[in-house]
Image (tube, rainbow, N blue to C red; front, top):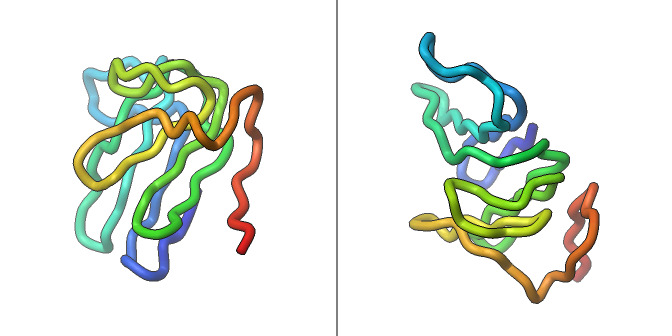
Length: 100
């Protein structure tokens, strides 16, 4: 769970059954703006950490894809699409932290 206090959005990730018909077998990332929940993406493995920095949402975990996009252990959302921020490194990422 991550509370983005700048944009007033709560992000929650995990094995979430988003709809009555969904299996809940994959990890989902959901967002809540105080009025409604929406589905941010489906991950092929567990979500360990969530962070927003410079208006980019980063998700770390034990996954290899998000919404079908290859992204090994870390994925980034730019407001329009998911991508692999490969410059951040590889391997098992359990926690995210901004170092200024």
